[in-house]
Image 1: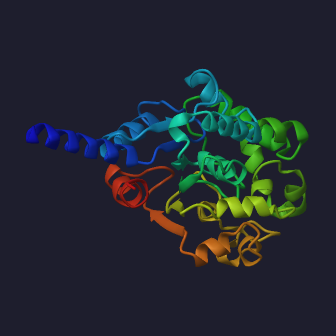
Image 2: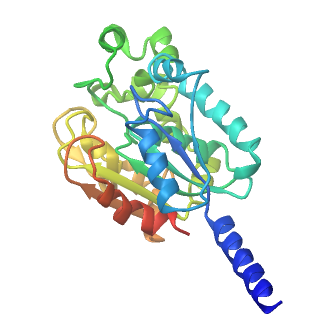
Length: 297
């Protein structure tokens, strides 16, 4: 009887540990999909191996991998965020809260999610190469669809703030033209909104500050994101495209329009630097810098 009792206690203890692992939501970047076995599929397998019992939900927009990739270019970010909000709310495995990891543009989509969709609560947001002040340039297009990449470039050349382009091209929705700041603030339907550029949405700031940690990973040799400082909320000084202001020198921070200054003072902002190009990191780096400190609770 004692042996059975010990086994029961051990099993109960094991189950409680498993149940205590916070679920994880992943959102992929441009040119990728939720389930690519060489990218997010590999990340998911690694998380499941290192965090036994963890539930991982990888965002898919569309009915299959092809549609998911296409929707990373030709879609509307606001509609995607709302769709994912409804999906997460309906998922019983996420009702107690979750951690999240966004890769490249998926990071700013997850930030929009926590600002607009506070229930269920997001606990930690890890941004891997996300462009939180947007981009001003499109030097490299990931993936294998050259035709699609060229089409994106043609649309951006037509005009990122032209209504049709702005509403239907994902990359235009986080295009930030420092030479035309007023047009950006007035016409950007996504990144200007979630950054409280035109008006200050106090709900956005309050919801963002519910995070335990906002972890910002910048790639020191990033050749895709222009400027790469956007990965730490930095951006070009308005009126030119050469000198970059770090976050703490921007009006976004000094006026605390989004609550980032308050989060910084509370120790919730974490700035991590990773050697290498865009999204290039080792399993060891990811485990030591992301999984153990922010996902293992």
